Image (tube, one colour):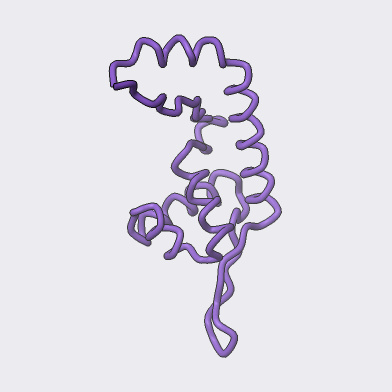
Amino acid sequence: MSKAKTAIIVRPRISIGDAISIGPGKIDLLQKIRETHSISAAGRALGIPYKRAWLLIDSLNQGFGQPVVATISGGKGGGGTSLTPLGEALLVRYIALEERMNAASVKELDALQKLAKY
């Protein structure tokens, strides 16, 4: 019986100075917020509590000195959350970096996958 190949990708973790740390978890959260327009729904989709999701977003807000998400309070029309232009740019740039790293690493990633026993 042959085993199907498992996807192997590079997911970078980036530090900008001492204040900003960006990695797969925060990026996945931003993607889910973009999709769901909700921090709590994004957290649920990723299996993390709201408080943890908010702390991850707040660490980005603090590090960049401006919000990466904008929230609108509930009311008659309901509330919601969306990425700010900074949050959108952060997501787009990270995804572009991830794609470039993976494209440039095909040979090495293939060799690593061949070493794996699964």
